[in-house]
Image (tube, rainbow, N blue to C red):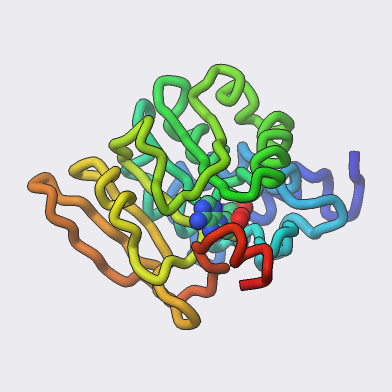
Length: 230
Ligand code: SAH
């Protein structure tokens, strides 16, 4: 157990969430709850500051997104992460957001992470096992798979919520296809200049897309390109 002036790890996680509320990033009680439940420190590599509002390297030319980006994406998807719903997290990396989604959709729901670096899949499972989402992993409502997330994960489609944690040059069609009518996808789109896009599938199957904010994510690409440094 750590005992610094800021308090224990769990307290510091709470302070991080409180700060995001003060800055106006989080306005939803549900987002506060889930981010307090899932301790971010369990998901960053040893020696990496867990509660600093910045992306951090996690190896394999990947990063864990900054807390304010995690908060923004959970909040955008909140209505589509209700108990019993299905969520897909593409480029699940550390597993942090997959654990948050699983906690929100609960044991009757389904949260799937897809990540193309098998080592990250393995370490994310270890991270989740240490977290408050461990029982969901054990119970089978949360799972993380190695694969190319541009293909989605058809087995548990259609999804109420899809989050993509890496920037796509354009929205992959399989992800649109796997979105449920009434479902929402949050995805960074672009190469150097990227927009976080909110893609809503209407009940008639058409999609409405709006740009939320300018962002900077690592690319959604092939494993080879990523390991070569893009
Ligand atoms: N959201 C995660 C990770 C963000 S970094 C977190 O916050 O921890 C983006 C992740 O997408 C990296 O782990 C990278 O390996 C993965 N990725 C990139 N392209 C991918 C693809 N085609 N299929 C699956 N995962 C991919």
